[in-house]
Image (tube, rainbow, N blue to C red):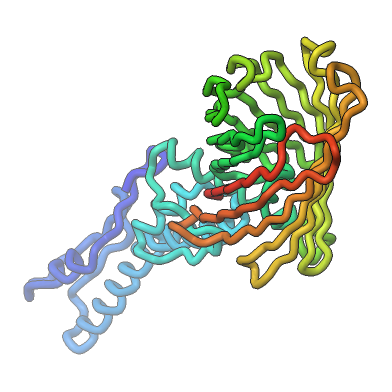
Length: 372
């Protein structure tokens, strides 16, 4: 085995036993890496020669093989110790595991994927460790139906809704109302990307795509269950005018939000307070204050009945001074394990207007989520 430019030979027992064959007195030299250890004289009396030779040969074999075995055992121990602290790359320890055929026994929150020597596998494992660390630093609240989820999440989500338009009494279908991918790149950040939804109108309004949007969440303070069970963060979202009115807004909207949540036994309370600020078209759209609160109750960790209030207050624009408030009862099931890290959850709810002014009513919502 070559290491650090030095060559080390591990003497095998077969070579020593082969050297003992024959009756003529001979002198043998045991070598390691080109270095002579000691001569063995075979001119000793018969009764003592064989035991002494066996003792000497066994001692030399142990001395030469022990240093070769020790580094491998120490490397395995180092992997066991450091991997538990999630500092050593999985690939390095997996190589030692394959060489020695010994399970390292490192405990992980999620089953690790099969490691390879490629750099792609290394960064994926590093990313998943950051996700696990973020999840372990915050509560494990379920995602509400309408209110923004007040923790960092990594999932794919797809929502559909059907709402009644009060003016004509017709229905509008919204496919992909909150669809998109949300990932956790660092332990304090979440980034969500939401492609345009598609709206289908029962009235004469043309069907079409809505706007593209994105969201960034920052976890400022949090603690998991048993250590405070709370979350405080700052969110920022924006929608870009990729769709044509009336399906798209036609202007860029900036939405800063303050989010907070608290768990009290089986009860969870999540609330957000933010604003919709148009980058243009303020005289038409006005500015809006958005306030949402969701209260849910956990049943056996799989069933989550909840009630939300969703409020919007306008200042300026054509809706100046208007407000609309909805109550949204809902029910969420999950999550259910699919494969390794992948889980599945789904929920449904209905938004019911409780104010005289409302832009729609009886919006039925179906939501599907795939956390990973």
